[in-house]
Structures are given as structure tokens and as C-alpha cells.
Length: 207
Length: 428
Image 1 (spheres, helix red, strand yellow):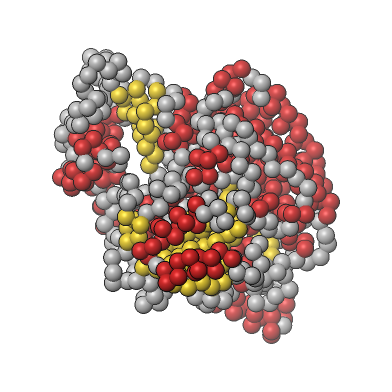
Image 2 (cartoon, rainbow over the protein chains, first blue to last red):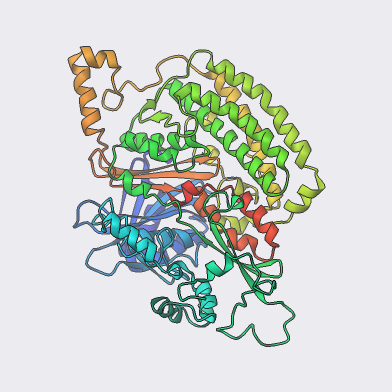
């Protein structure tokens, strides 16, 4: 593993980006770099494309919310350099009370597509510039919120009876992608709220 | 046609209308671009595969747009098996999470158990005993073989070769018998504990594993004889679902999916855990990144796993399986009942759990499906603040629409099978 010495990329980031690096620390032998939200995309691109860093493999994108309600949410990027065999964790802090948004990195790694959708689905964090940001594990019309948030009770917000009622009365279009909605619209068989989503996606159902 | 009828309901009909003509769903009528022009393409057809379909290997639903028989677009829908494991983990002690991991990749439960225990041990800074380390290697490699056997069987059956399914299932049965002797369970093993194992292997078990290993090459050779140079198999798998090395890395593929594309990334070699650097084994790598190379890679991985198992059995040391750490390891029952101190430790562990220090740990293992990571964030209590599984099948599956574009519908089945998905892990 990386041992107890910090990953040199942390120092390189600090000298290159200065104030945009909010801090670096170690935990269990892994180096963690916290970066400013507005420059996360730029920093991740630099980490991917600079030959001396070469973090070309995106291992994971996820988010963390702490039990301490004051602490900001974190979006966590796990990076791996296939050529240099080095592991790095980059975090972006999203303070509560502000809109939970961060730039999408799908343009850097296609593999981030579903990972960001999952974070959006389960945490409610919006990824700006994501081509198809919709729920992935829960269905699109899911009303109870974002299950992995700490204010979401383990058994869900609604009673069991209400959950069953919702599931049975759910319009199946709610889970459609924009493309499928475009097909359904051709048959004039789209509910009003889904139609709204279709219009947002643009003609032909977007991408 | 009532108001409530949806597109899928219509697609779920036998596919012919009252006059006996096939029902076709023209796409792009709203946009209008495809409806005009002297385009020789026929009307596009939308078909729905799954969620209840044997070729989707679980409850995967694919909405496929077809031009004749050619796949224009695939839209996967997942989440039918979502059980909120990661949320449940935040309400459980570290050892109580282990049964949840059985149910993620249920075709290779022991390697999930090992992955979780290793991540928790990294977080807590616990060193495991030499015997435990080797037993875990054995568990991991057994799961690789049993998962790949299921893969070979189901993929062959998807492509029309039923016999392979029977041969591989028979061998897999042998592993399940061995697991049953080891821990009492066949599918949901819950084999590990933080700091050790659920149990040591019973007497005579290693001899049985050796006997089983001696019989396995025959099955693998038979499968190879049946498939490796079979004209139908080659035609169905070669140049199907090709992913280049650059694309594979860009799409974060891992495991055999990535290695079949020619990228030799194996967590066992690159970030060794459980002393994998001391074992002599090769990482098979493909050249073309097609379904056939994925087949070759998985077959060779089984042979390499056999080598690792032989080496592990040769070096299996005597000694305790559980770490000598009363904080995390339950005292034996007879001591808990007779010794005051042991009883206190027993009580505290069962009632309060083992608290981890403040911090976070990510640890990945090479599961049969790819890089399986467990990411724990702890605030110092006995339950994690966040438990994240990095699910290899989930990330591999998202490349399916990309791989299937332009292939025939029947090739989509082959490509989907080659990803080796397990919905328990994808939906969690």
C-alpha cells in the first residue's frame, strides 16, 4: 500500500492550485485532499491529464453525510493511477444550507455516469453538466426524498400502507428515460408531469 | 386502449395486433426527423427484455430499440432489487454488516465477506493471524472459481450450449459442499469476522479441497474442448461487444472485463492484500476486448486460482484463526461463562459493538467480478457513518449500451452475459 508517507500528489496539488486546496490529511494510510467545490472539475482534469500525476482510472464516486448536522456533505472521488500504481482520494465539501451542486466529471470519465446518478438519487446532490441526471436505484417519481441522507428514517418517511399505495398508483412513465418518453409522447400517452420532464429534455428526448 | 395503458403493457402483448400483423412502435414521430427522407432503414422497434427474463441474469430490465435486428440503443433499468444495504449498514455494528455482504454478490459470498472484514480491519488497525490470512486467500479463490463456473454455465446456456451449464454446476456443487462443511451455509456464508474467521476449517477439510481441485481441470478442459474452438461459439463471441483498452479504462471497467481489453490491472497484483504478492500466479490479459477474450480470461483465471489454492494449502500454517485482541474477538463460550473478564468483553462486544477510531478507510479486493471496494467512514462509534460498496458489476454494466450498439439483438444477450452481472450487487 502507500504506507504511512503522504502521497506526493497532495504537495503537487498544493503548489499548483494553492488556495483551491482546502486541506490534505491522512487516514489509515490513504492521502485525502479536500478541494474547493468550484475548482474540483479543473483539479480532477489536471490529475487525470498531467503526465506526472496520470490518475487515469476513476475508481469510485460517492458521498458522505456525517451524523453531526453542522458538518458539510462530502463528495468523494477515489482515483487510481494505472501507470504509477498510486491511490488518491479527492473530496469536495458541500456546506448545508447552500444548494448541493458540484460539476459533473462525466466528460472526463464516462464511468462517472451511473456513479453520479447514484449519488444524486441517494443524496440529492446535483451534478452540473451531467448528460442524463435522473434517479437510478429509486424510480423517478419517488417522493420520500434521498434515502442515504441522515434525516431520512431507516424505514422511509411514509407508512408501509402509504408506500404500497404509492407503488400501486405510480405511473410507470415516471421511471422512463427521456428517450422512452419521446416514444410514449408519440402515442399521446404521457402524464402531465412526465410531459414537463420531456419538454425540459428538448426535442427528440435529448441525448 | 384505456388511459392507464402504458407503452410497456402494449409491448408485453404477444407482439401481433388483432389482424395478426406484428406491432411496431415507430420511434421519433415526435421529432419528425426519422419519419421523412428516403431512408432505407425500416421503422424502429422498441422491445422490452426483463426484469423477469432468464437471459438478464436477475432482475435487469433492458429497453432495446431495434432497427430490424440491429440494436440501435439499449436503455438499462436497474433498482428492482434495491434493498438499501448501505443505509442498513449505518445502523449496524461492523460484524453485523457481514450478513449483508453475502447478499450483494451472492454468487461469491466468501470474497465479499473477506473484503468487508479487511476494510474494517484497516479502519481499526487490527492485524490478523497467519492462518487466517491463508484461509481467507482460500475463501477468495474458491469464490472466484465458483463465480466463474456459474458465469461459464449461464453464458453458454444463453448462447445455446446447455451441457456446459450442467458440467460447471456439478463442480460448483462440490465447492458448496466444502463451504457447508466449513461454515454450515452454502450460499450466504458470512464466513469472516472482524479480526478472524467465523470458524476454522474442520479436520480433513483440506484433503477434500485437494480432491476437489484434482477433479476440476477435467471439467475446465471439457468446457474448453466444447467451446474454445467450436465454430458456433466463435461466431457468437468473437468481435462481439469490443471495448478498447482506452475505453475500458475511461469507463472504469474492472476485473475480467478490463483485462480482456488488454489492461493488466488486478488488485491482487497492484495493491496486494492478504499477502497475494507472495503467491506465484499470472494475470491473464486479453487482446481484443470481445466476448471471446472475456471467456478466455475467465477460464484462465480459474486455472490460476487453482494454482493459488494449491500454494495456499501447502503453506497453511497451524495456529489460531482469530487475532488475539479481546476488543474485537468474542471469548470462547466456556470462558465467557466462567471468567469475569471474558464475560465483560463478551457483554460489551455484543451490546455495544466494537468502536472504530475516527477516520476512514477504503480497501479493495479483486472479487470475481472486478474491483470490489469497501469504504468506511467512522466517527468513533461502533457503527459506521457511511459504508459504501464499490460495486464492480454496477460499473461494468453501465458500459452495456456502448458495447451493444450496432450488434444484433442475439449478440446483446451474449454481451450482457459476458459482463457477468449480479443484480444483488448492482442494486444493493
